[in-house]
Amino acid sequence: SDLLEGNDLYCFRRDSSVVHLSLASGDHLGTRATEDSATQDFVGRGRMGTSRNGRFSIIWDGQHSVTVRSADPSSIDELRHTLPAKPEVTVVAVADDGSRWAVGCRSGNMWLGTSNAAQAPRCLESGKQPVYGIDITWDGKWIAAVDKDGVLRVWDINEGSLRFAETGHAYSATRVSLAPDGRRAVTAGHDGKLIVWDLCVMSVVTSLAEVT
Image (cartoon, rainbow, N blue to C red; front, top):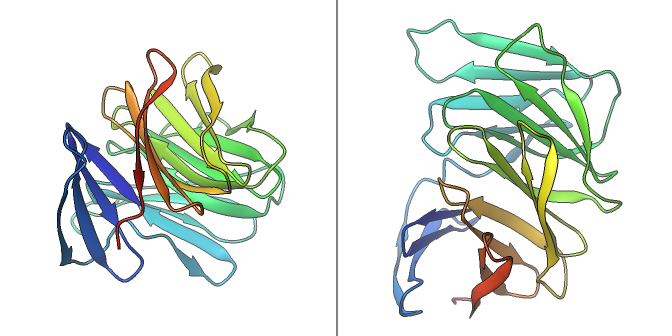
């Protein structure tokens, strides 16, 4: 999981360490151990994840239901949504304000939902390859997904329109992180690269080799 903040890129590894990179200089600014709250894990056949600010969690039960919960122990906020199909979910994500959530599927489709329990989730056709990474901006306006073919796609959620689609990785792309304003994205893939994208001009800003 990767987090983009200005010209600083934080890459969260599976071993719970975090790599700090400078996009301006390309320098490796250090690696430290940390508790990786952004890591998505298996829960039986389900999936779970948290918003990047830790305020909300999202759980896919492996059957039909998506549950979004507030992390505040004093809050009883919990929304459960039922999908009309039984998809093979590969990844889940929820916005920092809890207003939007998404699940990516092995079929290449995504299901999008909102904090409005009366609004049914909608299916978004992403492609034909499994979706491996999803990110939603803090305000729930933009959503990005990467897949087995190494393609990055970005949508305007409100309009449901595809804003950007480009291949940047030689192999599968596994993680994506959007800047809060939706202008930039960072992707990581099995080719060992981290790619920074300028979504306004639809081009690669920089490509960094894997940091060891």
